[in-house]
Amino acid sequence: MKSKVIAMVVKSATSTIATSPGVLDYILPRNPVTQYREFRLVPESIELALGKYLYPSMMDSQGGQSINSKYHDILTTVGKRIARHTDRRDLPFEFSVVDSSVLNAWCIPGGKIAFYRGLIERMEAETDTFGVGKFTLEEKIAAVMSHEETHACARHSARSLEFVVFLTAAFKVFQYGLSFFIANTEKELDRARAHQPNINLSHQHAMLGIAKTANFLFHSAYDLFFKLLQTHGSRQHELEADRYGMLYLQRAGYNPKVAVWLQEFFAKQRPDDNTFLDKVIHLFSSHPTSKERAALNRKTLEDLTQGLLK
Image (cartoon, rainbow, N blue to C red; front, side, top):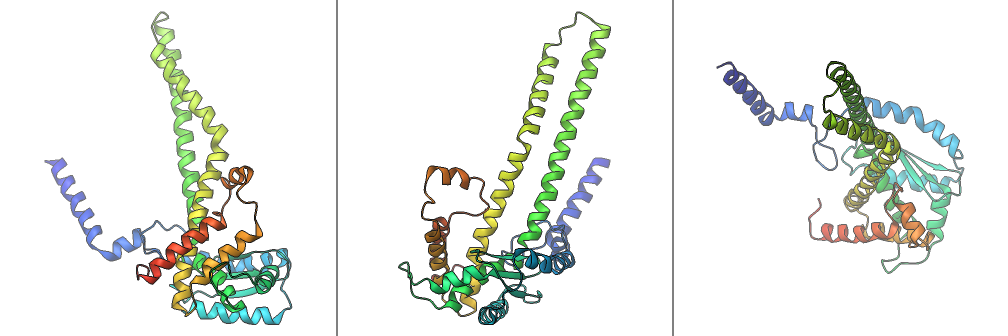
């Protein structure tokens, strides 16, 4: 009778959670961009605080603010235009040009975005259409900007932090559980031998050997396994930012084809990306190859044309 009552209570509670959007949204809120439900450990207030705290120091460490007002004005205009069409319009977006020749751009929590002067200069000088089309500097910057703003809107930095916390906790539980099992099994073996010296304990010894081997392998491969899982998550975030960034481009009135051009442009910067060594190194890369991303962007372009991505 008691078990039936407990079962009814659990069923009722489960039903309430499943049918109550408020409760479900609190436990498993939807991602603002993808609309997939996900656990959320880092609140928006922490995101904003992190971005506000890290932005000045990161700018200084990377080369400081560029004095090129032309680039800064284009960046601000494009950034604000795209931001109006994102899924987190209320983020305090900021846009800066780093005085460095590096070909890169980045975004940290809260919508704090920086482009390196070298990237803008190289895109401005590039005349190759890559069979995609001819685009203005503003459009090229928009392709990068939409990608970076998607990182902010989809909580990619926060999700990475949450993933690290979850993974670390899971590994610690496994580690402590395995250590407890080994210690407990050794005590039982000692106790059994003390009471019955001739007892057959081959099965227990085998289990202990397996546990110790697993413990050794776990500690040996921990860093590599952790790195591979982090890398996989980072790649997924990059592809997500590519896909939804193209949607933001379209919403803002830009031609999303420029996102394909952008990846072909990056592929041109690394013509030797197909060597065996490059493929091995790519296993530990946080970004998919530019050729892979260009192909996926072409697929996203088809989805946008067919109205499959809105």
